[in-house]
Image (tube, one colour):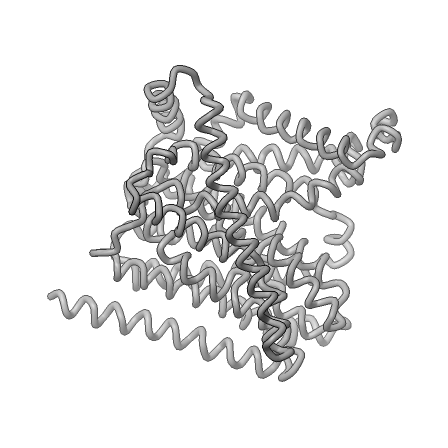
Amino acid sequence: MNISFLQNKDVFSNSLLISFSGFLIISFFLIFGRRLKLAVQLERFGLPIAVISGVAGISIGPYGLIHFLSKETTSVWSNFPTPLLSLVFATLMMGRPIPNINGLIKPIVNQFLLALSLGFGQFFIGGLVVKYLLAPHMDINPLMGCLIEVGFEGGHGAATIIGESFDRLGFSDGLDLGLAMATMGLLTSSLLGSIFIFIGRTLRLSDTEEIIDKKENLNTNINLKTEFLVDLRVLLINLGFAGLAIIFGVLLLQFLRYISNYFGEFSREIIFSLPVFPLILIGSLLIRYILEKTKNTDFISNILQREIGILSTDLLIFTAMASLDIATVFENWVLILLLTIFGLFWNLICIAYFAYFIFDDYWFEKSLIEFGNSTGVVASGLLLLRLADPKNISKTLPIFTSKQLFAQLILSGGFFTVVAPLVISKIGLDYWTEICALITFLIIIIAFLFNKKFSASYQ
C-alpha cells in the first residue's frame, strides 16, 4: 500500500527539509511510544520503547508494509548513529563522579577480561564461519571474518570508518555488510536483552525496581532543583560540555592524523582508520577530572547528562532500525544470518562462563551490560542496564565505565578493530583466526587463574 502524496520527490528534494522532517518523524514515534500504554507496560518488562518505535519505523519505511517514508528520508537517518553515539560517549564519564577504584580492582579486571574475550572471540568465530561454512558454498572475501566484531562491538560508527579500509583493500561490499551487521546486532541485543531482563525479574535473578519509579524520582529531583521542568540555561551548559568532549576527540584525532605523516605507511593506515569514539571518551573523562579538581562540578547536572545520553541512545536505536537497508539484508541473508547466529552464540557462551565461574556478585547486571555492549555497542549495554538496574544498586555502571576506558582503545572500534583488515590482507584469514583463538583462550585462562589467586589471597 503506497501513500503517493508522500512519495513526491519535490516534498523531500531539499536535504535540510529532509533532516527537519526526519527529526519531526523520529520525535513523533518516540513520543507516541511513550504515550502508548502497551509500550510503557512492555518497557517495564524490559522491551525498550525505542525498539518498539523502530519496528514501527521499519513497517512504514520504503521496505515496510506501508510506504509512508521515502528511501531518501531513511537514508538521511542512516547518518545519525555516528553523531548520536558520539553524544553517548561524551556523557558517559561526564555525568557521574570519577569512580574510586579502591575495592573495585577485581570486578574491573574481570569486566575487562570479559570484554577482551568477547571481542577476540568474535574475530575467531567470524574466521571459522567464513572459512568452513561460507567458503565452500559462495564467493567470499577473507575480510568477511571481521564483520562480527566490526558490526557487533564497533557498531555503525566503526562500520563506516572500517568500511573505507574494506573498500581500499578490495572488499567493496564491506561497508553495507558492516552497517547491516551493526543494525542486526543492535536489534538482537535489544530484543534478547529484553527477554533476559524479563526472565531475570520472573526468576528473581536481579534486585530491580520498576522503571516508572525511577522516572518519578527523576522528575521529582528536577522539580526540586529547578522552577520548571526544562531549564534552558542548564541544558545548554550541559550540551556545551558534551560538545567540548566531542571537539576534544575530533581535534585529537586530527592531530594524530597530522603527525602520522611522519610515520610509516602501515601506521598511517591504522591512524586514519581510527574512529573518534575512544578519544571522545578520553575527553569526557578529562573534562570531568578538571571540574572535580577545580571544584566546579556544579556546572554539570548529572541528571541532564544522563538524560542526554538516554535520549541519544533511544534516537540511535530508532534511527539505526528504521534506516535498515532491508534489500541488502535479503541479498546477503545467508551471510548475515550465519554471522549473527554464531556471533550471538559465542557471546552467550562466553558471558555464561564468566557469570558462573568469574563474577562473584551481581553477575546478572554485569553480564547483561556486557552482552549489550558486545552485541549492539555501548549504547545498547547502557540501555539494558538502565532497564534492569535503574537505581544502580549493583554498582555495575562505575565498573563498566572504568573498564571501558581501556577496552575501548583495544576493541569496539579501537586498535585491533582497525588493524584486523590490514593484518588479514597481509597474512591471510587462517593465521589471523589462529592468533585470535590463541588470544581468546589465553584471556579466559588468565581470568580463571586471576580470580583463583585473588580469592586465595583474601581467605
